[in-house]
Length: 460
Image 1 (spheres, rainbow, N blue to C red):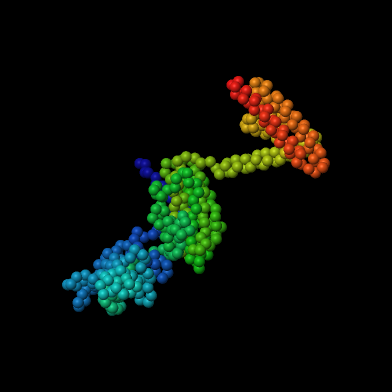
Image 2 (cartoon, rainbow, N blue to C red):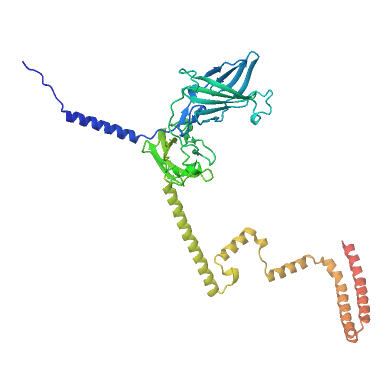
């Protein structure tokens, strides 16, 4: 009868397998990015004295009532405080959207402020905010031993005036969360905090969201980081991890990469240059982690869409470099050509001034062609011919010329007589005889010309 053989494993092999699996688990956990501190889903949260986050979002609206002689005081956690009686409700303030939830001192762990209550008879109250209330939260039980266990109760109340009341509320507080680097912000503007506010990652950047993703055409993103000046040296250099690793090229630059401490007056910049090397239907995840010494790291995720491939920045830089070299060669060669041509024309051809510049002959020809022949330069003989043509055009008709000839002759005679009589008058210093002869010649000229004019009109 055959019996089946049993296989035994040695204890050393099984222990080695367990050790290897444990090491693999540790390596995987270390490879995963550190969890970021997310902003709570409401404004009902507080930081304790060690900067740890305590989230009371699950306590919003929880009802606590204190029975008094004339009226009952009701606290709705992170909502409002009311005084209720048979005559009605009196509002003692509401929990504002701003953070009026701070850490306390002594036996008080936290303090809540309620403002903008009823204004009746409280117009000149504390900061002119109407009726107000302050709730001192104690984690645990009341000092007087009341309301042990359960969800807590109001230990006692104190009316400072008819417009302000103090309450002590004992509740089982939430467990403190991670230590947050308060005052640290990251945004797209030096005075904004879209990504990180007060050390906590904002909604939309805690994980990839398609509606918060960047388009393919946006290849540059600049982030601004600010922190409290006294603690700015705790901020370390950012770490970037891309998922998936292949397909998106990411480069970092700016003062934030070098480790400069950010402050509110001088924010540091983190320039992200990313280019798509491979198309993808879903966005790439760019995980940015900023380590903070002694605090939880600040982490946020940027999503980048890649609908098409993008050329490298080096190719465009190379193209501009080639263009610059060619431009330099053209400018140098043009300068040498102009200088050589100018020297040749002045030394060899004997030209001077602007005519010695190379290419001026071609430029002059082009200007003459564009301006037209009528605007060109006219020579002296052209001007003489134009004057002659003008004289011939203004010459009277033939009939008029025939009748005018005696007048012309008499004009010449009178001119001769004028010249003859004027010379002795010039030498003797008397001008009167010459003037008389000139008037006589003018009269004779007019007398001889009038019959010609009458014959002219008669001929016409």
